[in-house]
Amino acid sequence: MNQGHYLPHSGRGPEKCRRRPRRCLLKGCQRLYSPEHWRSRYCSEACRQAATRWRRWQACQHYRTSAKGQQRRREQSRRYRQRMRQRQAASADAASPREGQRISAGTENSAEQPCDRPGCYQLFPVAQQHLCKRFCSLACRLALRCVLDREARYRARRRRWRRQRRVRSTPPPDTS
Image 1: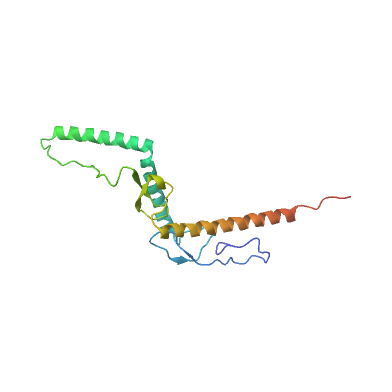
Image 2: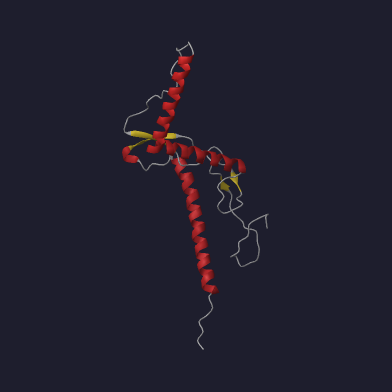
């Protein structure tokens, strides 16, 4: 049973499930592969791990834009500056250049946001009037949309199959 997945609702016995080849969702890979499961999005274990790393990176990006994340970053920077002052006071060479100074980018009414496609590390500016923008390009948006639409079709099919199975499995009412 590990060699392939079976369709329990086919009614023709345990036949191997035939699925069309798909493209890997990870940006940069996009290879065609034969899926092992109806919810598989990536062609290999390496792509799955890369997508996991990307999700962690994206979570960090979102956290840093939150109020709590910014407060923690300010505290971290304050502790770093304090340590640096102590080191400079201990050493005679106090002529080191400043580190960690970020160059202000863009206008003050726009923020940078990470793309929602797995593997896409592109940060793109989002103006205040377009806060719901989630993708850096049309290609990224269409790639994820294709996957989400396919998964929605599978879920709808499974719901229909369960409903039909439940109707068939209920015994007829007793009329005696």
